[in-house]
Length: 340
Image (cartoon, rainbow, N blue to C red; front, side, top):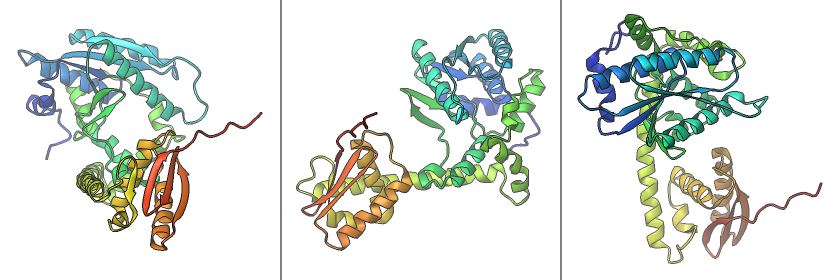
């Protein structure tokens, strides 16, 4: 266990960035706040200690939501240059939404980071999400009623917008990063929107000290997310096996379909995942919502149990039907546009 009052040591930094050794280039998402500035400083120090390391490109996204962002981007650029790191500032252009601005800004940020990575011939983007962020994400998804997959929170690595997204600081606390910067005499920006009670994450952040008193601190919540991720990975393996089993036992398995009786014999969680996979594969309206897939599965299960021969439903641009003892999932016809 680390003492979070002390800065991150060079030995720990080597362990954090060890997976980067074989990576030719990494785009660092650096907003100017303590977490991302610490990510840049630690990565630069780690690379300097190597004879050969990846090319580092710091990218700051100015969302155009705060006038201070321009100055903060300049400060990041100045620090990046002093560390021998390339820097670029990208701006989120266009009209900003009146609601859901944080979600829209996040999507824009990832899109711009991926664009910067492609322009730099980099296939990896690193963000500075910490253990504190992981705990908050778990709580937010819990409040939304997410399943095991969602409660696994953020992964160390994932694919997004055609690049490999890396989160090397998920096991590091914000306190450690601030201690690291203070020890190095490096300044960082303070974004007041992080404390804006209009946003769910900010309100949850204010509750964290109270939860910690009851034993649910960031370390415990992040550990729970890790355990749920482990369980989710195991269930996914079982779902893969079930999908192969259904293909082998169903003579008419071509396309999106399952033998109804074989499908009904599987555990509910596996049935749910297979149904969602098929809908996401053949639908054309984006990923299906978990709650809606659960409701649809209940309808399908009841129809199979009652021996119904006909069933037609649509969800997320997919058509789900029951015919001749088979559950079929196919693209649904495009919806007709209403006349003005």
